[in-house]
Structure formats: C-alpha cells, structure tokens
Length: 76
Image (cartoon, rainbow, N blue to C red; front, side, top):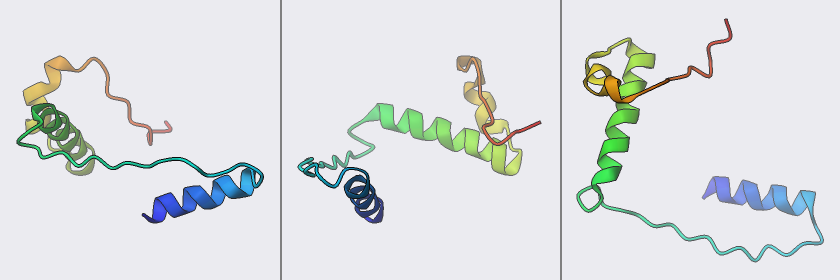
C-alpha cells in the first residue's frame, strides 16, 4: 500500500485541481485455479536464476519457446 500512497501524493502534486476518484481493485488468484500463473511464474523464476546465479538448467527447459531475453542492466 506504500506504492499506492506514493502514487496518490504524486498525482496530487502534478494536478492538484483534479479529483482522485479512481477505484483500485486487487484480485488475488490462487495458483491452483490459474494454470497460466504457474507458467509465467516458473518462467520468470527460471530467468531470475540465470541472472542471479548463472544457473541455466531450469531456463534450458523452456528456452526453445523464447525468442529474446534482454538484460536491461547490461550497458556494454
């Protein structure tokens, strides 16, 4: 909720004359009910392990489905 508070403060600073009447809804999904969440979560976790630990065994399992992975922190 800290991020939401910061966003509200920034919006009020940028446009103090506009009303903040947005409705925010958080939909919490259970992984067992949404298989697609499991797939995306696994893939993100596998990519994270490559970048943080150099461990590619989990990434290799699904790498043939990926066209490009771009490292946003590689400035060379």
